[in-house]
Image (cartoon, rainbow, N blue to C red; front, side, top):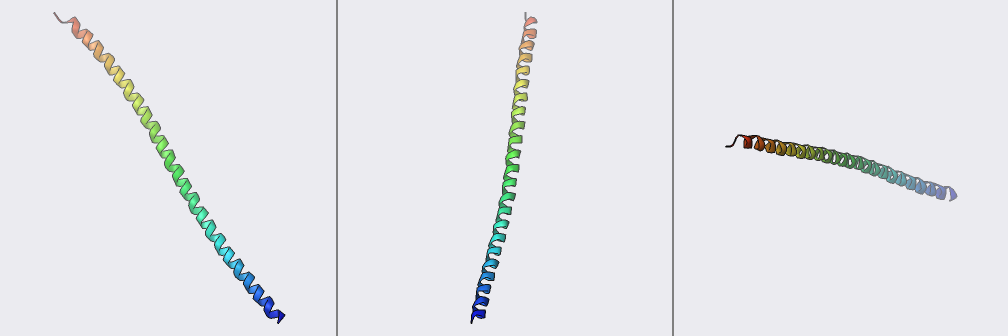
Length: 85
């Protein structure tokens, strides 16, 4: 009768709610994993940017050292030139 139909409807609703809860939990887990992955990617990009900045600074220092060495070489050639006969 009617009670049996109501019980069937309640079981159907309970089953749908349980399935929806499982789906929501899975979505939350997936979103959490995506957020963790995004944070990891952001950290890696930050590391690459930091390494690039360090490399740029090192290149600048190397260029400045090379320019200083060239100046010193020119000075040395000038000094040696004074002692030539």
